[in-house]
Image (tube, rainbow, N blue to C red):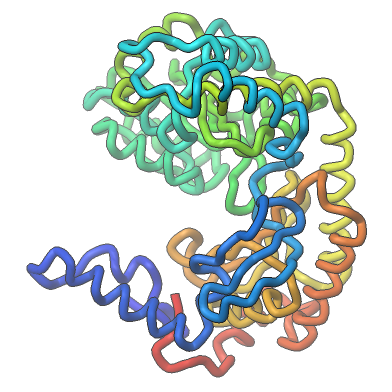
Length: 444
């Protein structure tokens, strides 16, 4: 079913009516190719990076071959530590010691000393007994949930949690539970009242900071509800670690509730700017997951050199509080600039800021202008967000300079004025988007 503006969305290609398994692939490819020819998707789709992903990037347009410098606000690395000299030195040393890969699963090939050191670093950082490392944050959430839950268990998940948490809950086979409205504790209580009778184990699963909009989960209320219903609590704190809490310890430190989360998950993209995910908790939990989390058991161990780099990045971060200070100075500066320019932006809760665009039609047209102005941002469109809730997302880093932030606000304000969406309500912005002229076959 098409959106209100007539443009197809990714949801339109999830299933097809044909008996040909590849029919939906061909239909999707034809739309993407058409959009590329109209230069609609070139600003996001297969853009080639000519150097490191940082606060400023050099990109090559895959259609024209043109290389240009851009301001970047869609890196997941809060501090750019993937480029820190100490981190890179640690990686080189590990490469010299053991090579570029660890070609076996941990329970068969053994635990290389760099992986063991990383596990110890993560468990100590969070004040937990043990930690298990996964090849990615996605693999961590899927492995935790499918490894722990069974068909007669109950699991309640926040509706806006990361896709990996959603998939893990669904694929676990747990028959009791479901999703509750974002941060809505009354709806969570409803789920327990309507869906938990007859279930064995009970679990609440939520993001700590929701990556789409940057809002923080209500940990005190989640913890209280879990205790009231004798349920365990799992939090995906991938976005929160490094950003919130007095020392960047994440959601538990933010609310001064150390140890409140039973299953604490995180990733290495934000603090370290690297690949990988983890879970930490009790020794009993981690030992069990080492043998029952299939996305860990049946995947080769994270390379030793990457483990060495991530471990060193946590040491650098913990010894340099100025990184986090700068991160929040930058986030506040950008939020203030966008708010005063007249955009619809939620209250600042994290280094992730979203600017309301409403329709996909306006989102794509607006983003095209930003790209031409040298601004590279993330875009949120259906089905990642509800229809008519499209937004442009900025992820702020400590690497951004004041000039970077001011130039971003100037480009946004100039483009916002061009489209007439400054100092407008969401309803007015949607209406403006619906009236935009757009190529007849739309965009994704």
